[in-house]
Length: 94
Image (cartoon, rainbow, N blue to C red; front, side):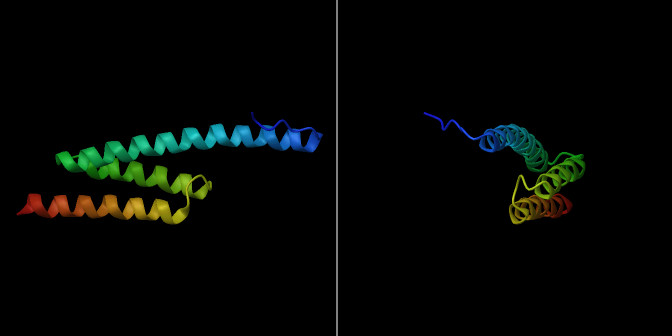
């Protein structure tokens, strides 16, 4: 059974937490979708993969700046995506 706050300040805090939870869930979902699209574009060798990577980078950095994601998590994911794009680019050049 969920905790029901009694004190007015606790009720307000609970409302704020629920709003933040909804917002964070939406942001994380958006980030996952954009990262997945970028990852698939890189794997398929799509010509627009660098643009998809730019969108994913922007979404990750925005989520990190809003404290939805930890900044190191965002940086790690960006680095891995860039690394895969770089490796895919060097393989296609050979």
